[in-house]
Length: 399
Ligand SMILES: Cc1cc2nc3c(=O)[nH]c(=O)nc-3n(C[C@H](O)[C@H](O)[C@H](O)COP(=O)(O)O)c2cc1C
Image (cartoon, rainbow, N blue to C red; front, side, top):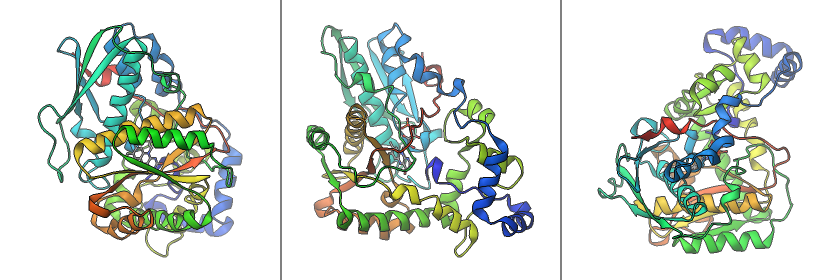
């Protein structure tokens, strides 16, 4: 569930109060009124976004790599990365078992995609310092296919000699890349050079990428992703997994620097007034669910949907998908375009089986185990949004 996809609804214990309030002025008016009276800014607190500003200050090559790697896109911004620096010339990356999503990502596929993105940014940052970083995947063997990769070593990065790698032109985009979750322009074509560079990137990692554009291709995807979002919302354990990760307001965001940041003046005001309780699970037919689904509307705006698929759903392929995905996003950033993953329909919990299979069929995937690893809307955000929160480097480094 994305940060911007949650409804602004009342606390369960205040349900009666909320219903009469909304009944009086109407749901939309409640939000408008709260925004009107509150003022303030949705910008995240400076402390929470500091890692975006200081990544290039690290003198030590491995810390420089990690300061950039931790800016990687990752599911629910949980940042499930532990980097062990105890062996000279190497970084051992472990998946932090405390930062996984057992309900919406029961086998850790998405968390490994986030690890792949982390590794790729580390490699790009090393090259910026003239150092080649070789990725040795799963030095202790891959985690079992249907178990969370809790605490297992995902990769070792082995550093080469100074002068062993040329700079990567995408380096400059690392601190500029942001997942924009606002409305996108509709019908604005994507630059053909960008689409070609995405395909080249996928091929380089043994993957396949495609863009679905035009109403005939996009409408079925819109239908499936909407249905998937509703399933995630009304399934109590998946809804609550996201709800527990919400950080509402600057103090909570600064204190945690991970998860789902909610900082618009409106949400803060409703939360303070007891009119927004993220722990209230939307039920079928309720006003709450209606408002949840309203929040999905901007997510149907886009120039197209970008999909990324692997020939099989192996652990190395999941990591490769993360590496390719972040490069695709950096390429988009360089071209002034935006990307926003919509992952609900790809998730492996049993209730999601219908949308997952429908999406594979719609995209012509699924033969011989071909697996959809990422689906993102792509295009041009109508309003710029800034960086998401990040924990500092020292939170993930072990020395
Ligand atoms: C595997 C994966 C799945 C993701 N799924 C979603 C999603 O379903 N909805 C969403 O809003 N963002 C999704 N994201 C984007 C993350 O929310 C985003 O990367 C994270 O909040 C950090 O923000 P940033 O990318 O701007 O640095 C996903 C990212 C990854 C790597």
